[in-house]
Length: 104
Image (cartoon, rainbow, N blue to C red; front, side, top):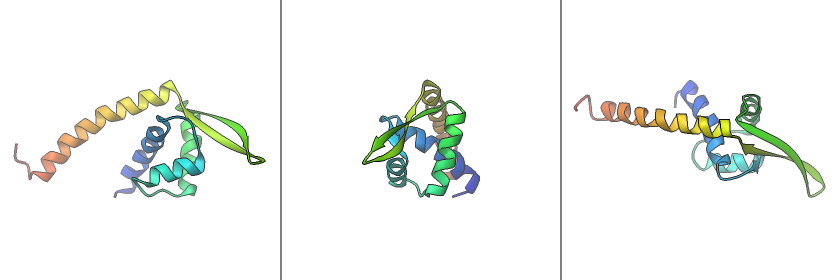
C-alpha cells in the first residue's frame, strides 16, 4: 500500500478503535493490527498527533502498580470519523471505476 495513503488511514483506524470506548496503547495496537499492520513506533506519534488536534483525550490511571495512559475519542474525533466515512464513499466509487476498467 502507498505509504502516504496508509499514513492517513492509520489515524482514522485509531479513531475507529476508540469509537468503542477508551483504551490504552498496546490494546489499540492489537485492535488496529487485526485490520492493518502497525508498529508501536508508529502508534504513539499518531496518538500524540490526535491528542494535539483535539481528536482524543488522554489520562493516566494505575494498573498493576504502573501508570497506564488511556485514550478516549472526543467530539472532534467523532467528526473526523464522519468526514472520513463521507470520503470513503467517494473512494469506493473511484475504486469501482478502476476495478471495472472505466465501464459505467
